[in-house]
Length: 379
Image 1 (cartoon, rainbow, N blue to C red):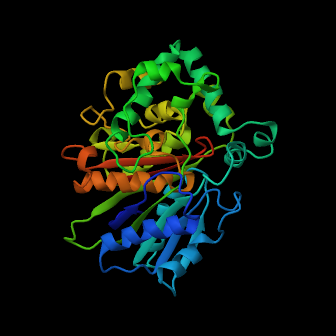
Image 2 (image 1 turned 60 degrees about the horizontal axis):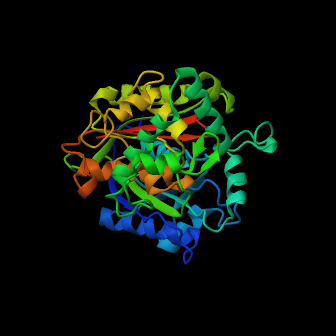
């Protein structure tokens, strides 16, 4: 159970290529901001999400080194690596530590540094989140899988590729006012249509840019009258692995089930959400995520985006700080970025990215091409 847990501090770093900083440095900076935001609270456990640090030759056992660097020792530490779902899974683990009574206050940090790797190496490492024996070893990667899925989506629903522009447009529209985003500019259709192809039909403008970054939250057992944002529900669901299922069936069962379970625990419906932060590492998964949580019927996600449903003043505001597409994708930190950005909106601290009168948010991150989905309801 995740109810009875509140978020008392948040922090994040700007998404960028941080040549002057190491992975540990980035993690410490985000954690320090969260600790400052929480004021006097000190954690008695630290959970760190990092997807690819070990594979990229970076710092391993990051949680221990983070706790030492922050001066939090002695403290219990854990590391979580679940591909792009690492951040959400780390929050889920922290909730379990608190709900079990083992700990009162837990610092959760997601961090990733991708800029030190050449593009081909990074793509190879990202492919390790797929089935290493049956997919990655044959040359499949998240980019190739996203391209195959996008073409299948267009074929099955008889759509024009230009409709995918509206997914990227929403992200850029919101990221343009996020001072921590990489791509701080709106995207017009002419730019989108001219975007270079990375794997037909997937273009540069359909994929999230890899970056360095970290985000952090501090969780504790809820206190009456504290006024902090609470975790109202949560779920972590893993289904059968493999890229074949999303591509052939055009569904994300783990995402659907995870969202349904979290909403049920929170006692609300997707229509009650003031905003949603969904997984958008590429446009294909973004479209399937929209449909998986019930914001659109199968094949209609692009039409709903074209109708303006997902803008800040729309029916279901999405990616309110630009999502991974505009803010940037730091895989191990992506789920924590989503949580922090949702909290800022719910606290009324989102400035130019504020959704008016925001009261509830659904946050969902995916791992291994949608085989794993972690969802949290905040409010």
